[in-house]
Image 1 (cartoon, rainbow, N blue to C red):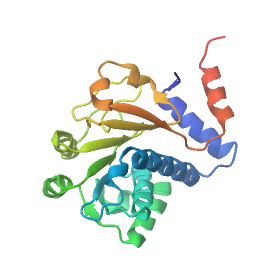
Image 2 (image 1 turned 120 degrees about the vertical axis):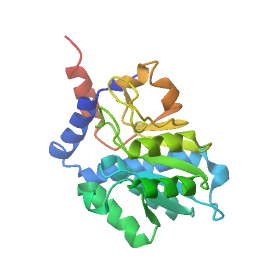
Image 3 (image 1 turned 90 degrees about the horizontal axis):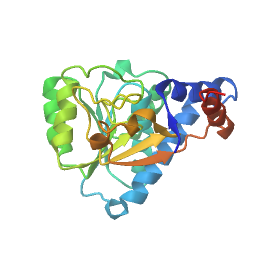
Length: 233
């Protein structure tokens, strides 16, 4: 089994972009599309279903960007999708912004999910969904989840919905596997490139559910090189 640290994940991305010329937005597209394929394969009995919707909760960073890609592909497959944005729209930048603009132009409903009032209303709406995609906080997270997002994660985790965590459950430290003050309890974690070192921790296991690995299209030799450099000779 292959495991990557936070820094190794960043190094794989960096080399793909800088050394091989793979645009970051292409890596994001591959990640989101391949995660969508896993979700659709898993939940075939729900698709397409126009009687209710899939809830996708997105943060402002690249994890949220993956969520926007997933929203687009699920929508294109005939599903009703609603996005819950756990950030101000002005905070979304870079490759994530490219994909955010696409879902806005598609007319996919986007709910503000920032203030305590918005979060309370959003969670009530999320309880009416088919299942939830957690794309709030990714491998870059460490420390504690700030209020009121911490309570949002707790409330979503307490619902009976199937939760797909994208790359890592929000609020989990991917290196140590230590859960924070608010950590999403996923039923399935779709992680990219390889499992993360923290996934081996017994503390992480209640939050991960089933672990699936999705490719992002980075040249395979990059992963081999990054892993070999971490192995003592």
